[in-house]
Image: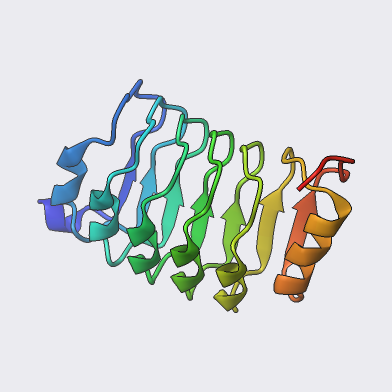
Amino acid sequence: NPDSVYRLDLSKKKLKEFPTEVLQFKQLRELNLNKNSIALLPELICNFPNLQRLYINNNKLSLLPSCIGNLKNLQILELNRNVIENLPEEIGLLINLEELSLWDNELGYIPDEIKNIGTLKKLELRGILFNNEQQKRIHDLLPYTTIYFSPSCNCKN
């Protein structure tokens, strides 16, 4: 019975793309896609209105779909060890997000809209090269959030 599936663990399944079969589980609250080779997260990911925890660590993602902001019930979003270069502005629409984990990605910039996530308690940015100015800007956007950085670099913006 697909409507009784609330947690789905597809970690370490050697997936190269997002499995569309997952769409039948409309009541999903937790989806684990860790340690696969998924390079693209389709807009279909946004068809889970009840999703609270999404784990996509250790994949090959370079971007997130802008519809990610539709996941209004999302509380934990883990995207560690991917190759994400930019976050969509819609990340600021995740009004219930408490933890955003992005360590070891290729981010060069955090959008201002992230300041709209008033519930964000933890932001993990270790392993990403931000200079002092960038780190200060992120702290200023999220003054009540615990933010984890690697030591700042002497790199340009």
